[in-house]
Length: 200
Image (tube, rainbow, N blue to C red):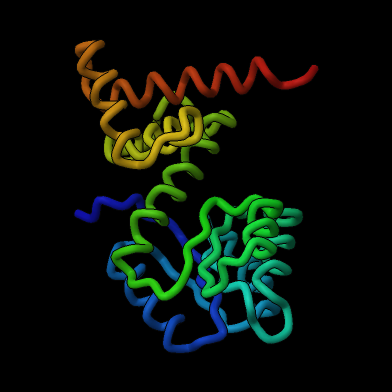
């Protein structure tokens, strides 16, 4: 069984070799992958398939990764991360302004990308749960609950994936309950806070 929570990922890169390598590696890790080698196709595929996450190259012919990201954020509410060979201050500033969940600098191999993808997917699940989707954990496997809670702790406490997992395990041990039960408790509490914080 893969340690990564499954989901659908849109991969966009105008370098066909990079695109094929990423798509193969992510598929092997258990994700459903949709790929595009340009921004226009990426937007059409995002609208059609509503992926859980998008991995975007920045510099492409036609629409750039930034153009695609802005569309995904405004019209599809699809989270995205960037894979780019550029790490100059202006690029990093624009990445932050757009609200990317991660920014990885090429060259990269799939082993470097998978942990960031798993973290981002866990974060997506945690945010959905906090918004009231299966907040109690109903319908989720223990593995999914764990990753959702890890994403929540990463976002809330500014932790990396490994420290967040350790923190979850520590909380479960202190409460003398299974990790999945502790995860459900955290997610439920986050959903309640989110509901109380809503205006009106």
